[in-house]
Length: 156
Image (cartoon, rainbow, N blue to C red):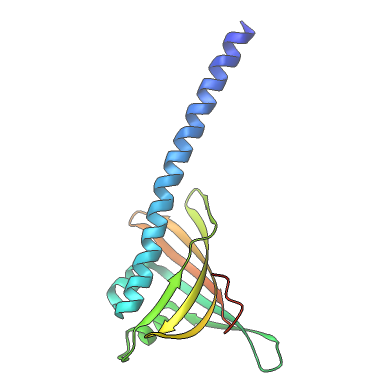
């Protein structure tokens, strides 16, 4: 009897685990698509697509060092970011990312992406993005981005 219950329990837990992995994989794909759409829109200067990837109240923060090597935190709203990116400019803003860790807990995701940023073909800076997303009725939306910025020691 105990053997039978153990086998049934193993079967149930393994099916639950497989279902979670499948769901996690589809969420991972959707999360990457949201982030890819964001950076594609940035390259195109497409304000509509940029805005559609953000949740209401999204904040972007950057961490850089001043001349003395002290860390400085700068904050901007998603609207400020969209205005800057969609303002006329001659060169393409091209942020090239590599996916690192993606963590998902229900409707919350956190994504680590090392990047290199180019203005046209000219390297500008590099760092790491930490992007937090929320699953909504309209799909995954970016709720927060914090990133480092430097000119050397790029991760990718």
